[in-house]
Amino acid sequence: MKPSLHDRIVSIIRERGPISVASFMELALYDPEQGYYAGAAQRSGRHGDFYTSVDVAALFGATIAEQLAELWDLLRKEGADHFDLVEAAAGNARLARDILDAAAERHPKFYERIRLFLIERSLAARRVHREGLGPHAGRLVSSSEDLPSAIDGAIVANELLDALPVAVLQMTEDGLYEVVIGEHGGVLSEEVRPVHDPDLLRTLPALEPGQRVEIGCAASSWVRDAAAALSRGFVLLFDYGYTPSPEFFRLHPKGTLMSYRGHRASGEAWLSDPGERDITAHVNLAAVRASAEAHGLTTLGIVDQTYFLLSLGLADRVAAGDDARAIRERLAARTLLMPGGLGDTMKAMVFAKSVGTPALRGLRAGRLT
Image (cartoon, rainbow, N blue to C red):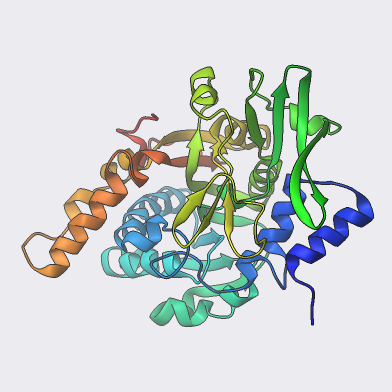
C-alpha cells in the first residue's frame, strides 16, 4: 500500500530535517498524486470545502466579461486582431464558461476574437476542461500547466495567489525567526529557526514580538512570470488581500494562514491530514504590486471587489421579480457585494503592459478598504 502523504512528509523530515512551511504547502496542495488539488476536478462549492465568487453565481464571470470587452476595445484600437484570454488556476473551467457565455450573448464581435488558454496544475481538472466549456470548446487553444508566451490580451486569475505556498516568519523577544515543520513521534509540529533566505526579508513589514506574517515569495514569482508572458495587455487578479499596517497585524497577530475542510475554517488544523484540506493565506497587496511594477507592469488600480463589480454594472444585471430564479440571483449579488462577505474581503487588482494607463470602467468608482 502506498504511504499516505502525511507519512511521506514525515519521512522527508526524518531524512533532511525540518522543512519550510512553503515546502509543506507545496506537497499538501500540489503533490501530483496525493496533493489536495490533485484529488478532484472541483474543490469548491456546496459539496466542496469552501466557496469562491464563481460558486456564488454566473454573475461574477458575466461582469468580468464586461471589463474584458472594454480591454478588447482598447487593444483593437491599437491594431490587435485577436484577444488571448488566459485563465490561471482555471479549475474545471467554470469561470471561463461564465465569461464566454456572457461575451457570446452581449459582445459577439469580441467573442469571435477570443483565443482561450486554461492554466491548471490539477490533471483531474484539465481532463474536464473541454466538457466544462460546453459550446465554447472551439475557443480553447490549449489546456496546460504553464502560461503561454507572447500573450496579447488578458491574464485572469481568481483566488490563485492565496493558494500559493508561503513562508511564515515570527517575531520573538530574541528577534526574527522562520517557522518550519518538524516531527515528533510521527506527529507534525511547528519549530523555529534563524532566517537564512534573504528573499524572505525583502517585503517584511514591521512586526512586534509575538506577531507572525506570511511571506508570499511564490505569489511574487508568479506575478513575475505573468509579466514576462504578457506581450501586451492586462492582468486581472481577484483574491483575499490586505495592505500591511500596524493595525492589521494587531488584529491578526498569528497571521492569516488557514485551512478549510467541509466549509469549516481553522487557523490551527492546517498541519493535519495533508492533502485532505485546503490551505490558504491572505495576499500582501503591497508585495504583489511591488513585484508587478518591478517586472514591467503598470498598476491601474487595486480596489474592493464590491466597487469593481458595481462599476461594471452588476446591480443592473440582477433579475427583477419574485420568482425563485430572481430571488436566488439577488441573494447571489448580495453575497458578491456586501461588506463582511466577498465584497470587501476580496480585492480586484488590475495591471497593464504596453497599453498606457487607460481609465478602466471597473476601477472608476473603486477604493480599497
